[in-house]
Each structure stands twice: as structure tokens, then as C-alpha cells.
Length: 221
Image (cartoon, rainbow, N blue to C red; front, side):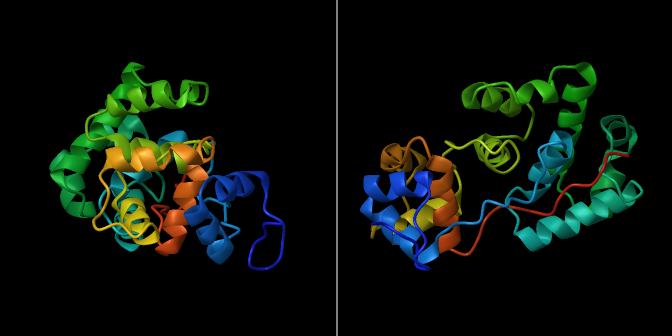
């Protein structure tokens, strides 16, 4: 019978992965059970998106520091869309350490919410593909940010973070590849993991002792 290193029986998702893929079975036996007590609550989708944009291409430590300066600028809370748009972009950038591109992305998110182009509550009801399309319509939000949001905020079970370099590097090491697989190759590798590709990504992140999970967002100002 398949089990974790502590002797406990695998849950249904891990049992599926272990049977479907012997390499994943090895990761599960060494690192499982993976902790799914994720850091971002489902009730603050806006704050989670602010956090996801802030975290792009940064370490968790750097992302938390910049996010802390951002919230401090707005009284210790996530800036409401209207407050963000009312702030001077250059002053916002220099006071927080955000890049020009990230300030533009944050403002694009705020504009989409204020105009109603992005309905955050409806994101919960959309399928993974539709939710991704709604998110990437915002300037500066690409596939990576959308996949991280779906995994860590909407808690979708079958999302492949194929654009995440850590996931791809972990796959290279675990599967003994000669180079980091591109997103297309990783997509093919991940077919046996359906319908639990999210869990597979969590194990790949765990094998590298890294995951794009920054601090919990605060309330909007």
C-alpha cells in the first residue's frame, strides 16, 4: 500500500499522482503530505491580486517588504482601487520600491475594478480558462500571475503553473532532464497529473523549498 514517509495512507489526490507517475510518487514519499494550508484567504480577491502583482519576479522576502511599504502608505491597509488611482504614480513608485511596470499594472487593476470590467465576485464562478482570460486582460498580469492566483487564492485543484521557473527547474531535477523544460514540454509532462496538477506543482515547489506564497493581504483602505 502506498504511504507517506510517516506511514500514513495517501489521500485520494496523492494516490492518483503516485499511481500515474513514479517520479511524482517518489516526491510524495519524500516530501508528503504537502501542506495545503495556504496563506491567502478566498474572501479578499482584490488584496490577493495586489499581492500577486507585487510579488512578480521577486523573492517572497522582497515581495513582503514592498507590500509592507505599500500598505503602510495607505494606513496599514491594502489601498482601495479609488485610493490607488488618486495617488501620484511616481510618488507611489519611489515610496514603495515598486517598478514603473508594477505601478502601471496596479493602476490597470484598479481601473478595471472601478469601471466594472473586472467582476471579482464572478471570478469564483468562472472556469479556470475563463478566469485566466479575465485576469490577463489587465495590463501586467500574465499567465504566471493568473496561475498563482488560481492556485493560492481560488484554490483550484487542476492548475499547472507552467510558466513558473521554480516548477520547471524542479521538474528538470526530478525527472533527470538535460535542461529546464519549456512550458509546452511541462504541459505534456503534466498530463498524467490531471485532475490534480495543482498538487503536483505544490510537490515540485516543495522539492525546491520554494513557493510563490507571500503574506496575507490586509483590508482595503
